[in-house]
Picture 1 (cartoon, rainbow, N blue to C red):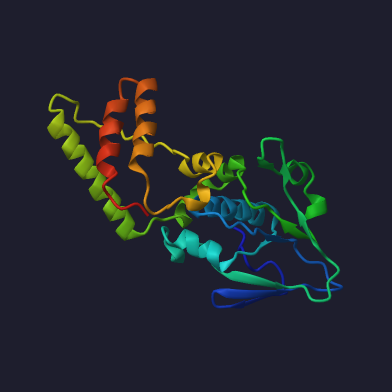
Picture 2: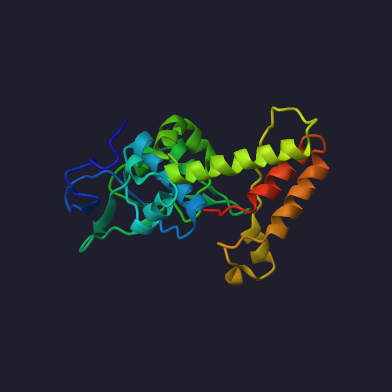
Length: 245
């Protein structure tokens, strides 16, 4: 594994902070940034993308405190290998931040230029990996390492396990003839995207999820995957009463 921070002598580490002083006459590993302001799913994406370029090409990542804090709200911060928050001192440097990403007509980010010919990007550049990275094929290459870093906090894990056990017990109580082996199905219902289409995203209360919206999503799932969806429907109904993080 390539250490994510010690890329050059220009990196000055101080606890969980670091400063990168851009040299004027010395070659240095290209520096990465992202200004993503999204919630935890987006922050996991940009973290994994920055990790990929750090490990694959030896680039220097920089992470904002609010980005790390978003991830650390659910995952153990002590396990993150890119915990340090780096500030780039570029006073007097002629270099400007330039996009490492490209965007297709659907709005998805991709990185064909650098993956097909990485050499021009490896040194002496300030590279922005983008706000909403979604190159899932990058993550697969580092999935075992990312799994070690993204370890859910114990208290959240315990609450989830309790909620799932309660849901299973309730389902079996209501359906005594059901098989004891219950398969859990997770559905990503993109509620905020729907609200954005309706022009209501700014008024959405993310901490108070609308149960009717998720119930509708589960009902549609049930109608499509008839046989095993009933279990998921019952589980969702029970889990809706638990606090979501």
